[in-house]
Amino acid sequence: MDLRRGRDWLMLGWIGIKIRKFKAGGGKVIVITGSYGKTSVRELTYDLLRHKYRCLASSRNYNTAVGIAKTLRWELTPDIQYLILEVGAYRVGEITEFCRVLEPDIGVVTGIARQHLARFGSWEKIIQAKTEIVRCLDKNKGTLIANGSDVTVRQKIKKALWYGGRERTEVNKDGAKKIARSAGMSEAEIKKWTQTFRSVPNRFELTKKRYGMAAIDDAYNSNEKSLIEAVLYLGKQKKYTRILVTPGLLELGTETERVHQKLGQQIVGQADYVMLVGKNERTENLARGIDQRVPIIWLDKTLDFGKVTKALKLKKDPLVLIENDVPVDLA
Image (cartoon, rainbow, N blue to C red; front, side, top):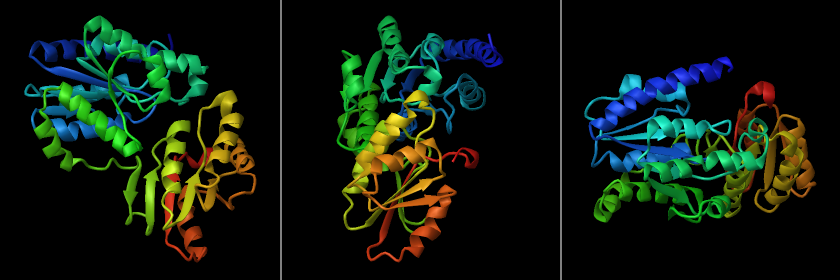
């Protein structure tokens, strides 16, 4: 057993003790997992439930055993009624381990994509890992909620309370509403408090101030499905000069060439300019897929897009989609 696994086993044991005590006092646990959308659904769910219940959601990007342990250690108080936890995974069996100690009353699958493909080793293992929560909920008689807009989720999960929508923000909000209904909120309460939804930083966040121009900040993370979804949204914004800024997708392993060339083909017609960050296997294959059908500008760093965009002297105001970000040494 490597050091990380050993540390996680210790953390999971401690988490199990805390959760058993929490549930013995009547507390309920919501576990949100998937390849993408976890943090957005977690935050939107908290935005709804907090108006009726005393809630605690895991902080920031805390979706590992250590991160969840920190949340329970420093933030869980005796008055909390609902614990909303985001759970990530990098290998088969990890979500099963989490479910064993968290004993979710409500479990959510937000989507399945080729995220961390190099770590998992195959698409089949990703599917296996991301659907482990289904079997856990069957055993615990918990409620399963799943994103029916995701084709893979629909194919691999036979029975769930489905949510969905046409665009990512709509999908995530509908997921939060479905969770709120399962937690006992009325339709009138949900309708009233939906107005309190806040945007989640760096996750398809629309902003006009941060970069000195209109931007869709989706820099936190990305995968094949979410990138295309975001690009299709960009393509509809025809009153702007549409600009995509991306370093491509990480951890695709042997699929890197194929996926990026396919993505390049799908970008054509959706953006007026593409700014590729760094010259590497990812961006060069995106360029091959685009095949000179959209002007390409090469950047050294993601944040160079601002001065480069201003130098273009565009006739229409720009709208910049910042899709994914990577450390400078990987760009």
